[in-house]
Length: 117
Length: 111
Image (cartoon, rainbow over all chains, first blue to last red; front, side, top):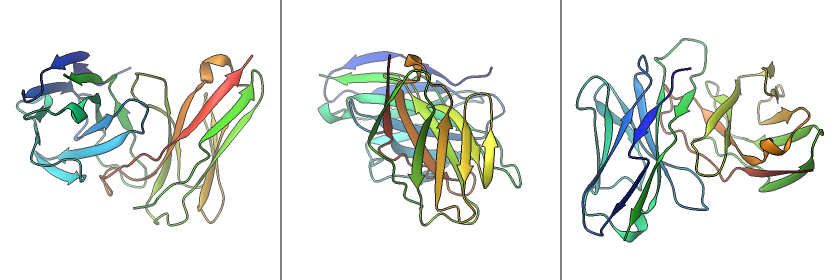
């Protein structure tokens, strides 16, 4: 079964450093997402991306964050000047092209655990 | 955006059927209802999706009444490995790209 893959699985970084989390979405998917989950809390939506631009973003996704699809396969989340409160599991997800009269399913990767110290 | 409300937690025993209900009073005409399962330190995993009436797959059933203001995920004969958090999402990725999770229902299956 196709899956969303994420790297690294775990990263420790010092406060103030930049971090890039990488994702390879499922190959025929066109919609891409980043979510995060702080330990013990719910999954929070960060951003969705379609046709090489941001479709929606949450209030969490401020100027500290950016996303990019640098080539045909990767989808990245960059966090500039990391803060302690950025420590969380970051999930990448993707969904299929729009299909009339049916819902789409979002498929999630296993996550990248970011620890900011 | 359709907000969802679920019980925070539920307990069950192995072999029982578990029904988790989600309320979504302001669901939109084009919205679908999707349920996900999440184990600790893992990504949410798709369980089932439906628009109306009943949907069944090899894992679960989803019951949606005519007014679509709620839905019930039914897990037949749960096992210890079904202990997880279950999330109900309402929306359609291509129409409502902001697919937000609620707090979910933490299901604990006991021996």
